[in-house]
Length: 315
Image (cartoon, one colour):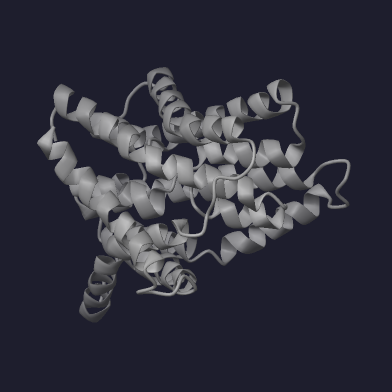
């Protein structure tokens, strides 16, 4: 148990430190956006390139992990649609946001940080890259198509897909992934200066990301329908891992490590950017509250996966 605490506690201590620094006004909350951009646009792309570019291609893309994580995430999304539309009888926008909150993990900021402490930074980055593919090619398009294609919207499917494609080609993580895979496939040599620069930037990815999560939590409030907010926030930490587990059992093959890592990423909280997306659709308070609930609860969900992992096969 002490080993698990040694893995998870530092992660959430850094998050708490970020929150505290904003709370006591040691750092202005406005700096969270710039620091977050540093992580998403520079540090994480450098991390992925550094880990993947000189890795054999068969270790970069693992079909079983990719398909299992995609299937489990889509099943969690579908459950969210049924819950919101059929049981709660809410609109398409609410269903799209709730379903995404249930199926889209904060892989880049929290999932990677925890996984890297168990299996190492390079392996964790490879799994993160596959999560980026699934989240950007499947989950986010499902969110925007469902939210924007409805009777009250004047947007067409073509215009929505064009917007998704435009954002996709500008995503630094996707660009870094494509470049890294090209280097991996063709075994291209990486200039030493490039490798060392990427290595230095890689060191900033996890700690700054976690600090930004804490900073971003300051000012968020638990407002709205708390029973539904709690259901989605805590449901993310239970439903998503369970759907991933179901997908793993349905799709034969894969490595034991990959199965546990998939569960670990699924046990991470919902991605914090959903609060910004919620602001665009007029539901910022609800989505911000879900981020708070899932982030706090993820200490227990991720610890539970790690405890089971250690008890069954060990790290």
